[in-house]
Image (tube, rainbow, N blue to C red; front, side, top):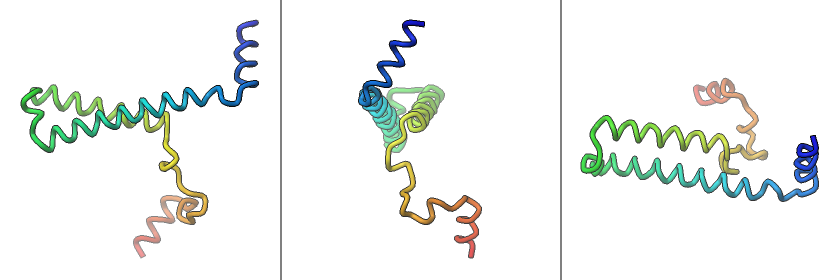
Length: 102
């Protein structure tokens, strides 16, 4: 009980407590995105054949893509969120598809 009180106190009293965690999460997200880009570049260039078997490469590529997607959900960048002044950001997917179909 005492430990929970101390943790609650630390979170409540220090508004910058989570900033270090955010910075670390963004760093991991960036690393995961660079890793995915590296695998895509290996695929496009064909260099992956020098280092991997077919199966091993595609497993590693899938894992890199899944990790990048997971980090994008855990630490979304401000660019991932729609702008408040963008009227289309407040529309639902059905409204947008109707507008583009017309």
